[in-house]
Image (cartoon, rainbow, N blue to C red; front, top):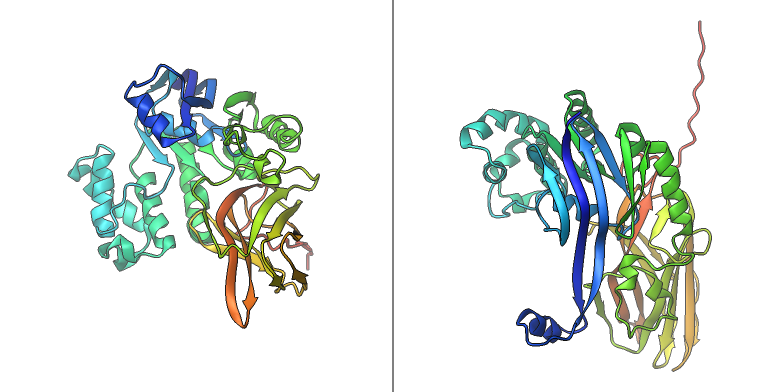
Length: 423
């Protein structure tokens, strides 16, 4: 088979500055002193994909999976190394990233097709296939900003999947829409394989990786640490998940501000740098973490395993019966689930300045494989008025690794039996 993707000694390095002024001084060449820290999202990665292969890429958050796909598709430029692509690409990375919200769905089909290098005549010939696949009816003539999130991703997926590429790049895109649309997506995926197309596939759904991939690559902290048969590499990945907190911080953790208190639990998590934090300051969320079933602080949880979220609160003034809350959203901002001490009927008590309260939420993970955002809250009632002491929106992510996904957001954990008889 011919090599259709060839990557040699690929590096992607980011310069991280402690201050914005340092970035400006460095860009203007006003200092010879090194003002930045080097963070390698990818380090000396080699990868060859042959025509007709389906190759999976797996790894924890911060391992470099999305970065390598963005370099292959031209969204990012490499710092060093060589990337050769022989064939027309279609990328299912950030679905609908090129859509204009003020345009109708139909206008966006033509806009995206043109951006992908097709003439209007070529788009005309594919239009009916796109409309049939998206199946959003007359909404195709409405502005995209009026679409539900489900309609939006259906159309975006339909456009990307029907432009007849030689190489398909897929990043967690097969979990969009309802069960019928997902089924249609997987049929299209299998059709691509049968046609001998080349597919590069990133997913947290290990069952799909095992089913569809001829070969799997395992990335960890920007380096390729394994490559081979799906089952062999998936087993290696599970060992990485268990061992990842034993001795080393991940790449994301290593770039944290040097002045941060390393004794805190949260310093060992990968945090959202643009999370929203506010409150009246009478009490604050001082620390928090997520731990897996073995007690390791991590952003990664294996589906069905137990996990714990711990929240430590410090009081600056007198507060009575504070409510500590935990909520989880998907990547599109839809709140999936959550609870708090009031819902759980747990009285928290009376606190004075200097007091510390630690609340632990323990449960099993039944969300489907994928990435989710966690928000924490510290609220209460003062003289009958609802009061926000401190809130941390989308403060960290959870990556759920699954070897079996079902329909929707969570797994009902059904026990299924069959009985066969003959009259």
